[in-house]
Length: 249
Image (cartoon, rainbow, N blue to C red; front, side, top):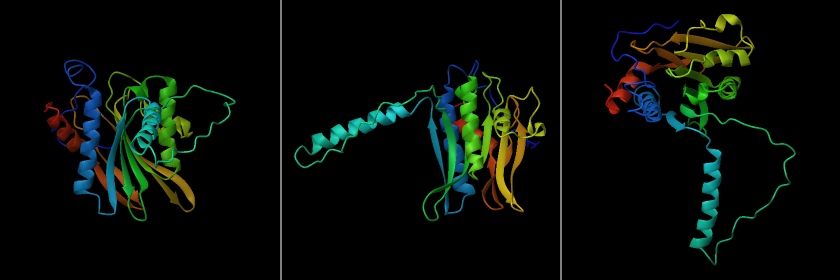
């Protein structure tokens, strides 16, 4: 397990009184993602890398469709005589429809800018919705496993006290990892770093787990950019700044 440094800003419970419902966790998670991206960009990432926050709660697809339809109307209105509306093609009715879950996203994505933007790493801030139902947990685990299978380094951190699931366990189960990679059953607040690597033509994933505790500082975990090039992700420093910005410190 990764050890934590000296106590600076103890981890608060953002999902129960007195903080909740006076302060919305969605705002804090979005703010924390921004502070993490700022910390990486300002202190650790060289010019050929960039960290960007990407946050939204709930389904995004309906918003995208509505925006697209509004853009078409706007083009026609602005250029009534010269604009050529996009060709519209109607597909046949689908053969099947199945229920789906589109997970919340509170994450930081790290890209290399060499030769265009290429995703090399991601930091996932777990939300209550990610831990809500079996299908939500499976959707989140599938997303994380997909990152790792594509060679994208990953860190997940879970400070959600209103749900008890362990999404590291769900991800490891999906990837059929050995039981030794699991934490104790009582561990519901945690952070884990994952590094996909090829050693002697054998694909492997290095794992650094850490536990989180209300009232204790948060860990610093390693994040691989490329090859053996790592940067530290200081969750404690970014958390302190996020708390200060939301008047929680």
